[in-house]
Image (tube, rainbow, N blue to C red; front, side):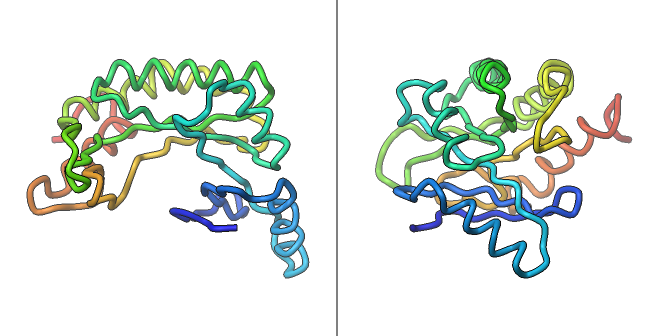
Length: 193
């Protein structure tokens, strides 16, 4: 199978793999877990991306669980921050109703001008701060009793997706502002001096 946009980190000494696996067979994650154990490593957590192509979220969650996923994430392509927050809250409920974990996402926007389309937008620093605050106030309380994840997570989409215009990484135009905003929202109750 083709692996797309691989991102890795460790959570509680378990490798976490966040991938989209198009056309993969259902048992590939089990095989990958077996390979890790054979090397003396803990089985990884699998966080799957469910995109707009799914007609029925409940069906998607069922397929993700059958596939061996531990949780899923999704990000809203809407340019309205309120829509993105509403979508995250709805997905938390859908995941919980189906015994699955969900990782909310905050994005800095989407710009498809590189494909000669006209849907481009970039969320302002204030919009991103507001979404992260909504994560703390509305989403985090709903992320209790997590299964395999055990610790609530927030997916920041994405570090360096320059071609699609959404990135948190430092840039000439924005400097470290998006990272500073996320830090300030998550760590402080009032803005840093």
